[in-house]
Length: 374
Image 1 (cartoon, rainbow, N blue to C red):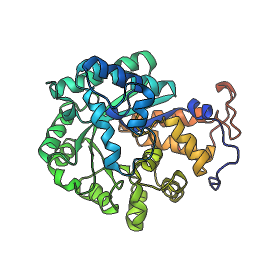
Image 2: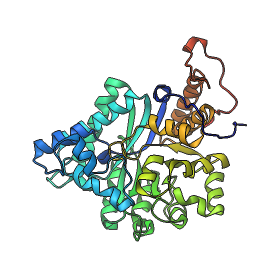
Image 3: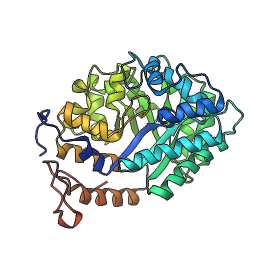
């Protein structure tokens, strides 16, 4: 049994969490560029931003600050998308995202975005996908981080466009794209309207994850699972409102892509201390921890894990399980997933409850709380 959760009086330092091996399964390309890159690309492409320096941009776009709603949170994308309309910009931002993730010891990452939003200057969908794959591939060659793509339909754009994204996913299956997602404004835009796109990817045995239960109730999650065939749920903050559905998700090992700081920023949850991922974890759900948008939420995976520890009472043993959950939930082949999990379980044994990290040769066997099974 894992020990009970009580927020520590003296939390471990962020550096401990930066050293841990980990995944990033829910991160948006267009919300995760470096602030300096946003400014540089805006100057290069003559895009008018609400300020001309990093401090001004952070203030104007409310980076890392409460916005009050998902709709308000998404307004920052109006500016980031304007600078991501060329192959060069897409490749650069993808490379830098993977580089930043690698520097905090993310071993495997799934980056999501919607190619339809990057065609304002005439790029073809294939060029949009190939540019990002090039950037991620270059970062893998240099840093060793494995990155794959999830392409998104958009709830508040036509189902016909979602179908085009689904067709693109099928075309790039096995070539760097591992899943299909539905993102965008959740209220008034049900996932079921995009059933044709979901049917196409499922017929082609492609993984599905859907943003659900963030800005709308648990019925959105039920629809994502039972109507659209989601294998993972993005956010799922309101799952706690339906006990039967919550236990269905737990029993069927449907992973939850939790993004704690983002959820506070959008107003989906009141505070980190009241975030439902602690409840979900205690009940046995397959909880994973992610950033959502590194720029707009001003965070990293390491920081999100540190906040789970410092603000939500997750112990080192709990954090290790969250990390293993991430590898278990990756959209990669079963035999590859098993190797990842087994390797990470062994490596995590080096990280001790008191914050010490022992050399690899001195590490003992993994504790009973971690399972190498995928």
